[in-house]
Length: 286
Length: 286
DNA sequence: TGATCGATAGAATGTTTATTCCATTCGTGT
DNA sequence: ACACGAATGGAATAAACATTCTATCGATCA
Image (cartoon, rainbow over all chains, first blue to last red):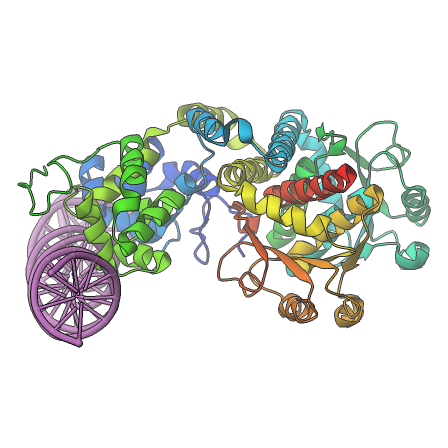
């Protein structure tokens, strides 16, 4: 598990990105401060990722105008064991690549008119997920997210409140935070014990409250109680009119697309992961 | 480069397809008339083109359940010089789809370094979600899903088993199924009561077991116990090698993309919604 | 200007990899 | 049931490969 804010200057020895997006960001960030030949490799790598994915060290080196050993040094400067290790990440990018439009069309034709009901449903939910994620990415307010991270990172204990449809989100965050060593309490409201679970919340703590329509009244009650005890509140809702929006210190809005009346959870999940990892990163800096 | 003279049995001309579409057609056409092991390779190649593109002869052979030499013979039977020659065609397929890399690069340079860390994380998780969903949509086996729906729809009670990272999925399904009037029991393993929760499972019931690496041993135990009592098993895993894959009546594979070591849940969520709604639909028909 | 440390090129090395070869098995037709 | 040819598994082999090592070069600071 690697996270920890990757910083600018440090060689970041212990772990290098395993996914292409992070690696690309790392290369962009480090390219300027690298030695001449390594900068040359960085530039080539960003411009010709496919070459790196498929080529051999010798062939890539020749095309980039450097020695094979330079590729190894470049990889190691980024924290990888060697060129092969770096190459794996470039390959993963192609493995996970979203299929091209033509490919999808071909596949659609293959499934053809005898497409099953299950496939129709899957396609619908998949599309809803994509729309949700893309929509949130476009509309999200980075400043608000930063603020939320600030509050959560500063809390002694994070109380996670989410009932009904929001529960999968908070339960995921509880799991991930546990793995990352972030103290949290998952308020699940089982057996109506929600009030007891939050009875020790203090001004040093924070509550993350997630609630979508139709609102669970208990979430509102718990949020108000936590606020009365001085805790900071971060809320995630699908509307300004949510009863927990006005009492929150930071409020994040998410509108999920839906299919057949079932709303996606993809955008909320992505936000949950972002918050979790960002809090861990923020804490790691100190 | 390859202009081998004609070979003894003359299974093909001196030239083999250099583009993937043609090769695919050739394999489909010839598959039936090939020897047993070569048919096996043909089938594997059509199902896992990415593996062939990236793997080594040894790794592909192992996954396909044949000897490396068989891969070479297969390639030669199709008119190629050897496995590497055939592999080039599989790689060209990935090279060809170049969606919008330049576009993304420009965007990255534009946001540049002034993009917040939170935004970088969000973009990463959003991309992972999109890739996961699209990838699953492309690779999913509609017949298997249909079968899973059949089993679940026929069950008196559906037992939902998913611990750790899989719990958000099962807890969502429990919520949604509850709303739809589908009788289910969410086995959450709280207080180690997993065994008690499943002790009344019978042959009229079904279990949906979700497990990803690292596997929770309790999930395996519960699955085996349920099978021993005669329940039908539907399993969702990220690998054939999952201990719960072989004991299941239907096995669905999901490979989620990951960012910074955190795997997305978007594809699994979409599948969960699909199964839930499909089961409700199937029951509604009767 | 001279000394020192990092960067680089290119050859050497040891490992990985595809391929070939051969003995054995399997299937088929007499 | 026998013989023959094709098919297969597995070890042997040779080529390709990434990586390491060392001598040289270049830049920076005293």
